[in-house]
Length: 162
Length: 294
Image (tube, rainbow over the protein chains, first blue to last red):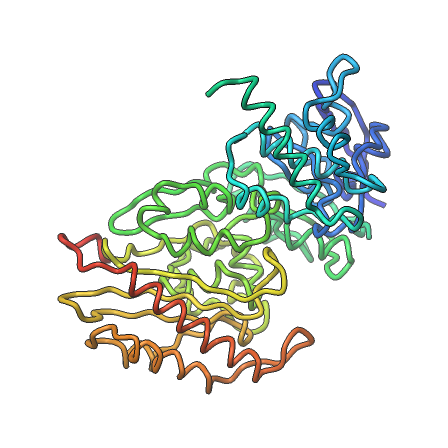
């Protein structure tokens, strides 16, 4: 047993003071110490992408980062997507396009898709599929996930004219 | 799937990191963590001490220095991929980086981590070898330069002393107008390549002035094909010449592993080398002015 470290995690704008061992991954700290179980863990070695969160706006795998390393960084998780009880355009697009079935991979895809759309809602289909290939879904066959992200992209382009 | 306990160290300077490395028993450096953390989580690696380099000042960034690009060891793969300097001068590296893992892992993974992890199939190791990179290494007795060709000692074993660390890599700029291409075969995009090929061609007066051809994933370390390079030099880059040079890859020593047998790797190597050489030749132009060839 190694000593526990005091870490403050800023998740969706809220500060969480937690006491964790250095070996605690960010994904486990979010779920076990912050009580934010929206972030899912699939493989725990960086292959499946289910634990994708945004670190200072960029998508990362939360199982490949220790919680102590996220001190002072802005973390965004799936719990932060809806605003005032209203789902984000991407979340709505997932429902409308049947982009999920069991839902296990969904938080990871939503966070990845959010990062992609915030960075470049005009990205090509090829670039989109390439980026989405980092996450694994065993139910949908991916087509509806790509369709949902494209639908949300169209909505976001209308909202914020270039 | 949880890492075994370790003591965590968070140095802010290279000196502090080197001091920890020299004084702690069974310590590992943590760079981007995209290979080491899976190994920790699967308990393939269990260091007593982890020295996290992520808050060390001055280890990240791409700068042009005297005919070379200098890339800090902790520069994220994604920052290199998007660097205008790298895109302009080292298109081979930009192209290869699109095959390295995925956006999430490239946001964390570093060039220094890739080189020191030294996976036989790692794209950045093959690219650094193709471009004759020089590694800046620091240790208790000071700094030294190490050629990338002297880095691999064996399977995933870099020739760094336990108390040394990589701080930057310098890549001499190929001349403006050089042609470069990276080709790989992997079961899925983003996986480590089963075999890869990196080619660089410099043309002068319609002939090949200099050729560089490297294979990744065929053995413990990257393989520079010096005899094929020599056969290309001085020749006009005809389709037949490139095909013949690539065919030489079909007789290399290649490894067998659960992913693919040696004969399959040899066939992949010849095909990928031909594609890389052909693409490099089509991208090469005889330069109007000589670039910064080191």
